[in-house]
Length: 431
Image (cartoon, rainbow, N blue to C red; front, side, top):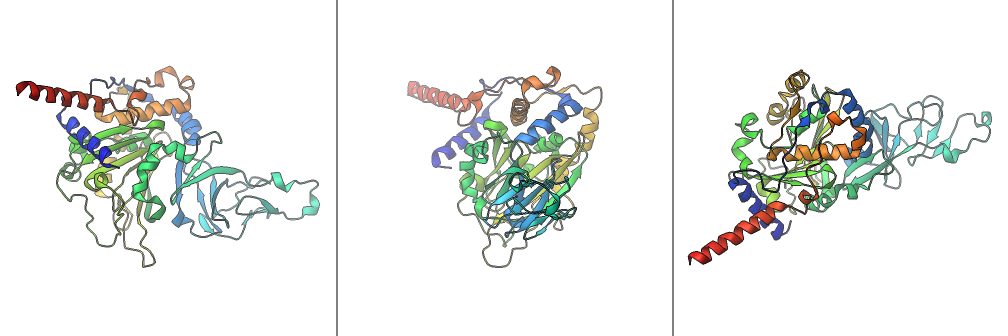
């Protein structure tokens, strides 16, 4: 961020701290229908559209470090194999042999010179080409060129590997939009993976994810952990195209975000805001992450049924070079990765109870506050991706947050400029 961006954010923080109502230009948010958390029809629409058309973080280059390395991935119900090709490219294919549909690989990860189906021995290159078959004399006119593995779109952002099942989707950089430029300061091309764990939760993935996309809950849920170091009344939400969002909340005391250990290399290119504030991004549909000059720790929320989900915790740090890897535990868990850390336990402790409560006849919908606008923004984007006409009317959200609130637009800045002009005029008149 340049100094002008920093000045805008600081001004918005003071605006948020001093306002007595939502911004005048901000729309009233209709209730989010309760069925979006409990209705099988909406869950099926999400699986059919959202999870097949979005860019999804699947792996880190440290998990596929050399040519020939492969890794299975099935977080959204589709069998995918990721492969590090000899060219250096990372390819993604359906883990399905083009002969009889058997899985090409059954191990979770490994390294092979070629991918060979154990059922009948058909083998493929790391680029998905069919190389050889057993007993070729038993086939007539088998065209190898159209019998390769079925490819899935796969693109990288630095060392992060994303997949997308939709051939018509925008590129990954187009999907991220201006966030891709903002993320340059974090040097994702030099990040290393030091922790990754998965935890099963008994609630819809949105219930778990939404607890990490607003600060309205901080004084209640985190009174002794997050709240003392986070000034939630100065939190600034920013909405981006494609359902993405960002929150920036300053620390209450200097140095609160400094690293406590001595093993991590600082990301020196990170600027003032991420050093002094919680700068957290929500990337549609399931990434939530604070990013700073010490750690890059995304949380990923995956559907595992309408009332269950899987929480994937990552911890990445700056490349430590040729020396030994630093002893850095998962930012979000206990040191051995067996349990969620205190903060995430606080965030997830009510998930199962909320799910049961939402399934009751007494739950109709969610009235969101202005501070929870990122949740509404996510739901608007979800409906557009599904196709509003495909959603039963009683499960839709109204498209009330318009383009005027999409970055770089921000009506709050106009309100601030107006107040500043009025203050200058008042001082001039008084003098």
